[in-house]
Length: 555
Image (cartoon, rainbow, N blue to C red; front, side):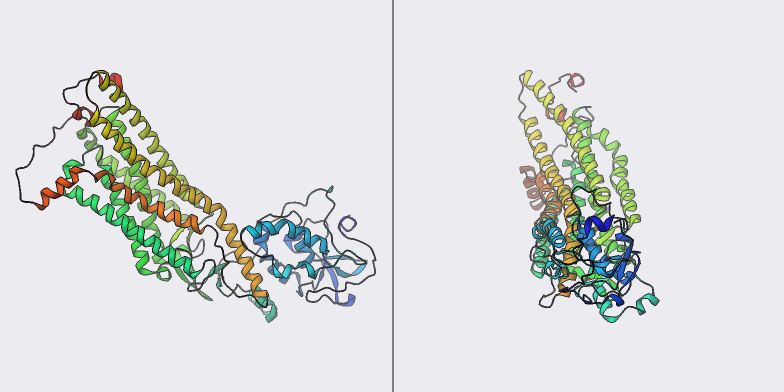
């Protein structure tokens, strides 16, 4: 029996004394045993509970609503006895033979605190004030709930808690003190139209992050956005000055620069508009940052996210197209004209495929505004499938194409050297291609790693930070505000840097003497045009005109 395994029966008729929580001194006649209806506590091998409980709740509905505020701690799964401990406080054990609520033992509280406090300490979050272990009873001449014997089977899995808002009639029956306890912390706003109890950061306040952190993130993001814009603009202007220089297979570099140029503009617009005008939505209790599944309510947030997400996917697609063009040129000996003939198909793929992916992400409605950056993005819970998966697939596809193209160029270089001719130009081309590939692939891979890290860390940190804010409201000498150490702050700044630095380094392809001569020719007096390059040859064959290796056997 449950009572035989978790309750110390030292004196069955002893009343609870020294209990520090509200309603601890209820007499037996004021306590009534009733059937347990709190879904979170079902399956703990007891089916009777006593109301009012030790938190002063008059019925189980109020107790279940307050218990919902502690779900972030439960979801962290730091202690196997946490569920038993919370239920002994909010839905205390009751026996037909003992007319009283049976509280939790102090040893049970200390055991749970010992298991969960290291995880909270790593996130610089305190142990909840409402669950202070000094308020609970020692195992003396009292009835109390202690941890089960370690030899007993583990507590069953935690069932889902129905965290629903009460109806209007139920809300009228709750006292004003209880209503105040259920409200969100001062820096948060309730989201009444959500299926679960949700608190979103209030706009204009510091809920999860400090003001200095948000100011630095905005300056960091805007600075790199301007560098990306200027670098890609120089690449586009160089293409405008001398378009014949950017022939296939290197023509996709121009469209890659175009994507990052427009992408940098979106970040510059965000810096000029401010986070409130972009990522905030009106709620019943005031404006809040756009919560999950509610991104479509803010039109500026939706438009900004659509633009940024689409351009990001276009840049990843053009990277795969670029590597594929080099593969066809180096291995299959496709000429520039042959690649130019399939250019309409390349453009249809590079600009059309992201539309389908972005549309699917929009249908899911998993768009949320981040308080730190004020940017609208895919929620952390859906980032792996809607953001990491498509970008990682395109990045991997481009790397595979690039690897085969590099291997083909190495074989051509070996054949050139075996024929006794100089391969300096080819080696220079291979070096430029290798550096450009690394400058794109490494930041892109690092950005995906940052997204994966944030999607696994930030949801738990935010729920625990919300729990700390709820506990702070219950304390007397606690100043509301974010915790000192914001989780993932450095990773978020690194992700912003990596998402824009690729645009800065993409201009590397035009950092050469040819660019200087092209601009000098534009700015100087007109001169006789130079003879255009001979058409119809693959780029490798054109560099080594007169050398005729068996390219079919080399490929």
